Length: 85
Image (cartoon, rainbow, N blue to C red; front, side, top):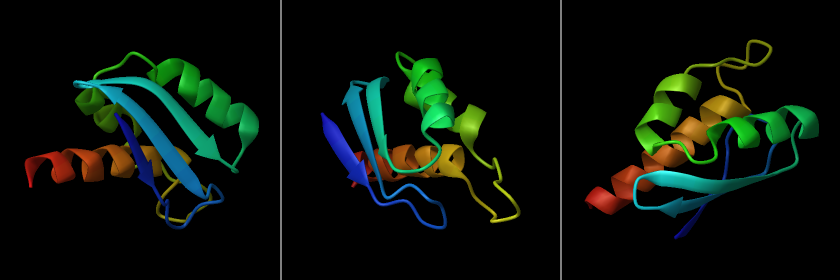
């Protein structure tokens, strides 16, 4: 399943999660810091969604109160919330 999320307060403009069950099989982030996002992508592919949230939630970028990793956690939380409804 694919799920798109519009991040808030960061440079990236869209986060597309590609999910199979409770596993993130891939992620595409538009804009943002390309090298860092490639690294994050490499690290989170194949992880359980809840594990990704616990690793990335709360990371701050330059005092913004959020970051691209934090927004990935937010995207997954929103996705999980949609499944529950």
